[in-house]
Amino acid sequence: MLNITIIVPGTVPATHYGGTQRVAWDLGRALSRMGHRVWFLADKVDGTCDFAELRKRNPALSLVKQLPEKIDIVHFNDQTSDVQDLKVPHVVTINGNTPPFPLDRNAIFVSRNHAWRHGSESYVYNGLDWDFLPPVDLTLHRRGYHFLGKAAWSVKNVRGAIDVVCHIPDGRLTVLGGYRLNLKMGFRLTLSPRVRFRGMVVDATKYAVMQQSQGLIFPVTWHEPFGLAVIESLYAGCPVFATPYGDMPELVSDARLGFLTDSASELVEHLSNIPAYNPQCCHEYARDTFSADVMARAYLAKYEMVLNGQVLNPVFGTVHPQYRNLSWKK
Image: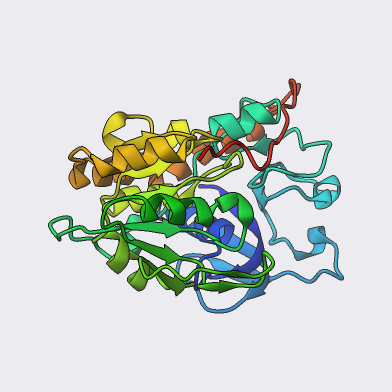
């Protein structure tokens, strides 16, 4: 049994989206289920936990003074300077595309492409604890499509998703994570009656929409580190229609799971004559490949390496450009 402290930025438990927080929470639950003892140290604690101890981090105190006694390993989420003060082994999960350099030698990225772009081969795919999410009914009639993500962020390209749907005969789009009037990107008002905006939604609403959607339209214009929207949509039985950037070819690794292109016209043509995708196939792939238990076992392998004195990144290779606003052809 290992004693593990997971350090999380932001708030735990994550009550709405909170991608990093949700993944870290589900990792802790899976590790606890496997017999390990888990502590969370977070910027804010807003709830209780029946599988781990929650502690609010005090920024005025050194990290060392806030760790439980007899900890075997500390798991940071995102780069931190506090590792310099540690006397116990640690790993650092890098979630974003612009972490501070130099990178920690025990950095773990969230996809193969994400690691490669930072000169590393060390990665663990994110996973979710599907048992704690709403069940999906794969027999429901599906109509229209959905977009899931922070729509105010231009690289998520909700505008591209809207344009595609408006060129599909009888196309409809539900935007989960955005609003009809968006002032964060200047003044943007979407008038099309084909598009419905639901704003930030809880899991029950999100899965109610996705289990009746024909697929996720996700034309991101950056190198996605790891698309939680992708695996959640697949779990709900939705194929994924996205750009081939970042981890997309890894997550949508089979033609049965969706279609990747950087061309709006090509995607419109595909969706106008959409082949029969199998919701059960999408669901089972996400369930089996991106579960919290699979993620936890992969992290345990990394922990053991570090506890045995190994360094996850003894040497970093070439760091590749982190392009933003990649091609999205009309």
